[in-house]
Length: 365
Image (cartoon, rainbow, N blue to C red):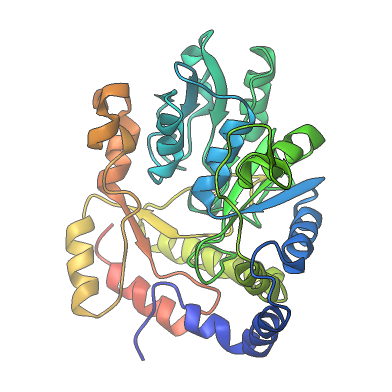
């Protein structure tokens, strides 16, 4: 049997009855938009993270967009973020005609380097978006401190890859002003389509999220602001509710498999993403850093083992974003884009499969 990069089929098997029952319930009551499962999921997700409020939305991208809209971001505003992420992190900034200000990453974690943020702050800075990459958060205490001492700048954690991870025993998505996550199928907690959620402890922001996701509506047929069609479908909420049943078990398995990767790779001298003390990772991807990426991929392909590259180009080297930041300004991000390689990772990865992967990596240190 071949090794899957992310084994969603295996994940579905033990949850088949629960997920199918949840979907059938929606089919029976017929409330496909804003049905009762939406509110149920929001309450359970808020409880899981320890946040006061959770608002489900149509995707992780829309979670970021709605968050910025709720802060009143407008043309000319500056948003500090990382150049090493999925493009949506910067895309939503530019969509609002604001300017992404890129800060280079830490070479060992690939997360934004908090020590470099303050010198990029200006009078136009209206938010900071650190990305919790590969399942592990950035240094959120330091980022929040910098934001507070520079005029209480809102901090939006892009936690699309880290739902279920912790920072100093506090859950990702409940570490700053706003937390955003994605339920894209390959995420640690995913649906079977698009979906996302926004978290906050401020009632004012939660009300804005709810209004903006419904086209700016406050009550039926009355609109007080510009919004978007940003609702998460009831069926997708039902699927996530079904998956929550074993999510804590899956996190435990991800950590065990990720830590086993750490141990085995250290043993053969392969460089990897560093896991920082006082932070847990949900290993959304398991990523190594190597100058021999092409040769490793060729060997894995010959052995029919999938790999992936997140991300082969930094955001500031992509055509629409080059004008915002010179490539030479983010050398660590550029270096990482040429070195990162993600290996198969899921809660269902067998020890024998992991052993085969490690054996193929020998002699590549």
